Length: 166
Image 1 (spheres, one colour):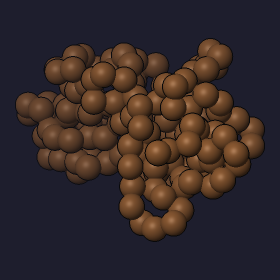
Image 2: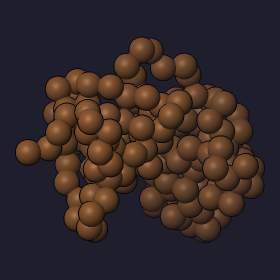
Image 3: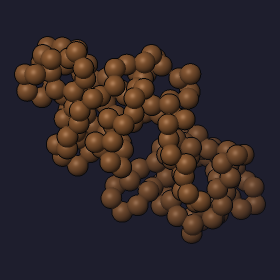
Image 4: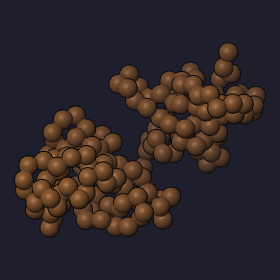
């Protein structure tokens, strides 16, 4: 079950005295966290759904959970990571991927030579960047995730084919 979960948010601090807390989300629309009726913790155990959320800052919402009405109760949730089931994700369009689909994929050049493995995907504001751990040593490097560097993505085979790195 745990391998079927997607990390979408983390409770980062309390807010006020009525049991609200700040949640950092990885969602395109942070307030959409209330649309997920089944949330899970890192052990795969179901947790109470977030019933209210309002924007605080870019990816941070102020939220609440039923039966949490004091700052002390909310403080017990600090640091908790929030997950959803993969089945709740919307279908992607062609040439569109969820980060979790890319992480751990093998990276090969166009001749089939193994280069390494994707260890993370970032977006610093100018597009997605793939971090790759080299097979030959423990060094990592980053490349923009676009067609010029990654002309072919084969998710079913868990391989990304990239242009040769000079």
